[in-house]
Image (tube, rainbow, N blue to C red; front, side):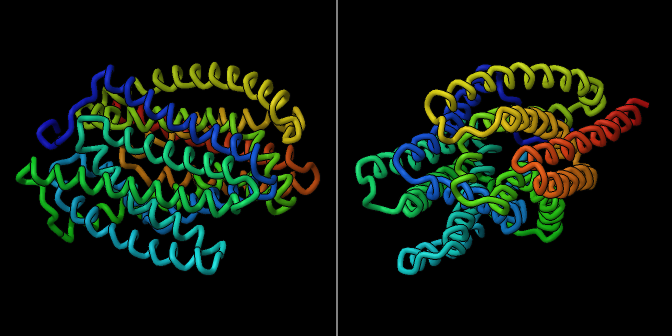
Amino acid sequence: MEHERVAFFEKKGRLFYQLILSTFGKAIAVISLFIYAKVITKNEVGEIAYIQAIVVFLVTILSLQLPAAIFRFSLEKKYQNISLWIVQKSNYFFYISLIFFIINFIYPNFIFQVLLLCLIQIAAQIKLEMIRTKSSKSQFFKLILFQVFFSVALTSFTLILFKDVFSGVLVFIFFEYFSWFLTLVFCSKTISGFKKDYEQFKPIYKKEYALDLMRYGVYLIPTSLSWAVILHAPLILTEFFYDDTIVANFTISNRLPLVITMVSVLILQVIGKNLVLMYEDNAIKFCQNYLKYSFFWLIYCSILSVIVYFLNYIVILNMFPSYKISEQGQILQFLNAFTIANFAFVGFFYQIIKRLKYNVITATLTATIGFISGYIFGISYGIEGILFGMFFGLLVGLIVSYIYIIGFIKRKNI
């Protein structure tokens, strides 16, 4: 299928550069809440964390997973122009977000806040994914880093300089929105450059191709929604059982464990294009090597988990002792992060081979079992019970996934 590709394999040096950019961006995102926790109240920290979680859920549903569809299909020549057409239409998400932004700063409201952040992110992410497939200059990763740095830097500076003057939540929302707006502007300018450089790159609507992208995206909605549950169910359940103060404790203690998940996801983001192209070029060879890749991924996750666990123990104990949860809870947070990182690896396999039905099944199964178990155990055992229930769901999902993948590989090799 070489003739159908419009992208080339990224070289190792560029992949490493992209990984550095992504890691730096994630590090800033992780540190941000630690900074906020030093200058605003626990209630505000808990509220910001809750807003971030709800935004993830809304982006999953309202985006129709078009960013993921744009990335996967734009790597194939015949889908380039319909992808650009969708990218141009995505500006409507921004226009609606701007209305909510203006209303919110006249009449502050939680619903307006999550909607304005959700819609501006969707508009920017759709454009970012087009840049990710089309650009050879790592612009996708530079823009993601810019967004995080700009938002965190200005939010932190304002909160420190004007402590107790402005609402911490409103300051966070303002600069988070503004950073996504600037990212959107830069994305639009970059894509305009693509249209000038490539004569055949034009926004052309074709119903058949549009339906292909929509079907792919719609299939991903329950999967991505399940992933949102997997990632944020412990926080949502903690919010259900406790107040914002306990939510803040959970969020800060869970910040570094999330690094394991974050770094794993960004590695997949960096090498994702190469993995797709490897499968498109030689599906049988890719499947033959997949279990070997899984083994190395397991080793990587294990080493990273041990390192981050001890780092987290030192940080919480010495810098944020008031946010500490039980040692059993911290261990379970790391077990969850370790399992999620491995589950993400097998989940990406389904996207590579375009077998999204099985991705939906395993992700939904995992999220459902994890959430119900977390709720049941949470009633009797608190935060530790919530985390154990989520871990149980992840373990079931991981086992089911590997049973299917091993069967698929065997069929592919026949």
